[in-house]
Length: 483
Image 1 (cartoon, rainbow, N blue to C red):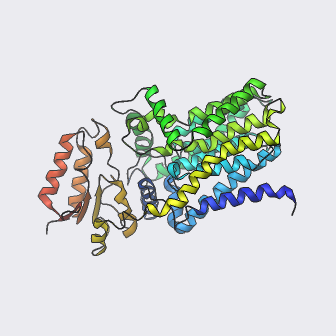
Image 2: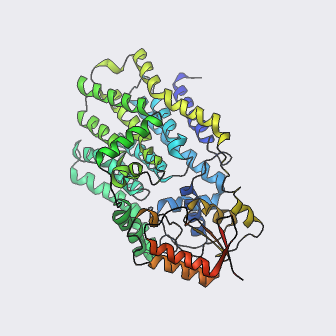
Image 3: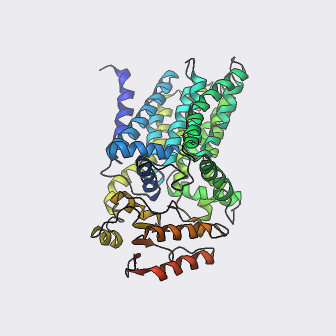
């Protein structure tokens, strides 16, 4: 076999094996993914995002899960796996084009970080797809295709409507491509805008046609600005940086992170052929933490948000690539030195994957399915509107298992425990109570006592409603409607 195919085989095999770790037999359970899966089911049943169910993510993750609802769990996994493989091979071609000594290494690093169980939570998280799109965006910059600026604009739009804050990571590259080169600024900007509109306009049409444009704007954008990025007690920047440092160390990302920083520094000192591109690439690495800088969730510790680090799967390999490809001196062209550097970069990510595989059996993924609440409901499976999950999104699993609609659009409740002034006028809690009464919902799974409400009035309304109409099936977190 021709040796030129070896890098493609290595990358393809790594990508496939790492994807298989999260095939439907072995995928990791995570509540956000259950929410996304449920939204795909609802769209298939004719529901419209934001109008008929509440979540504060941009819409593309719902439509992607709609494809999953149509194709099944294996179809969804195949779509995900092929997308990662395609991106990996695109990046490999770029490494080969610029004569990187071990061209397979950085695409493999991309896969290893993207599939790290501690930050990826398996497959299906929004930031997994934005990391993929970030790397495709970068690869497209080096394309000679006539329509590359349209594609860049389209990819930027896909990032924005998958996870808004991740668009900020693209800012350094966007500024660079608008300024660099012989093509006029206006022409590039207009083509990128046209590409962005290819995503924006169909979405606007869809939500306008379905009378959900206001809800789309209110829930997917204004909500995040007003609430998610403005916690009651925002930690300082230093506190957030220390929290990030501790997490990088805990996840064994410290060697990878600091080796990358050292590589970029050496490239800058020794003289990069494209210094501004190197600066842009280097800036994307700290910008990978933008979700934490905006929300402070990791520093506050009120939510499991290690997936905030997923952008590093793209930005670290990109920064290393720019250093390797465009440094003037031959410091990065020696095979032995390269082998040492690549070993430092890949060692801990490979160990993390190996530890996950070796210890998978210790962390059963069916703990919700085997819970006492679900076992009880298995004996009397609820129909549409006959089950409501309150203040524990893990149990949204039940909606997916029984393939039923919830009686209320409010499927996500942690804001009462996060924000003092959330639902201050109690309009949301009253609307939930009203809909449960209207549908005479038979079962409620509620964890209102386990998560402290910052607004005591809301808690009192919910407890009084349960006490008046339902009886707890003790010791379960399950309430049954009084006959």
